[in-house]
Length: 229
Image (cartoon, rainbow, N blue to C red; front, side):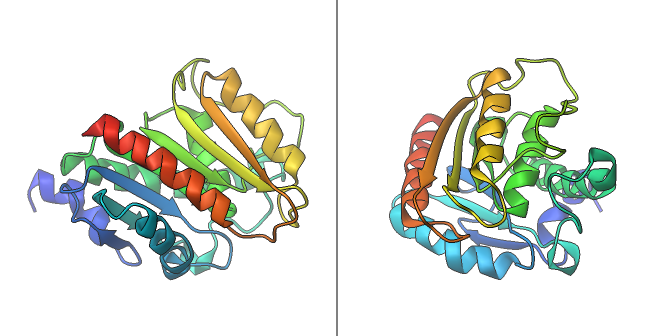
């Protein structure tokens, strides 16, 4: 196996779905992480198809990895950090492997977006706060920072490494799994690191990605695609 083939192998790993433009041929690449008890098919049917319908003229490579056993971590996002560390590290390795594979196909930091819903959204937040990779933007549908609320979070790099990063952050006003206050706290953490955060709150919605959240995500992706073109 050549070095380039080894770098791109993550895109052919078991459970990984790639839709839309072939890797390397899209204006943007978007890595999407599903929620607990979900899988790439759920993300494809409930999120990707809706985004693609709003972006018919934008070539996007959609990359959907699968969590082992349909869940990225067994506990809850507000468990002590030490209890989720191994699973967060495993998920981060999956994300980094896919980002490296996309970079080998020509998608650098300026054209690769990280997105997730629920569990996946919390892992997107975790990846950003670790600060080890630059992204074109991030979509965090119903997410929070790991660790008990109000406690010091490990960020892994100096403040300011997210300067200028556009982030769409959403939640419902009474979500059953991720309290709105936890999402608002995440917004503060990201802004403190320099990210440009748009927080959208959905009144009365269930634990899902609502149409307004899809519309807002499509608008951000279009803006990022225009910048990357």
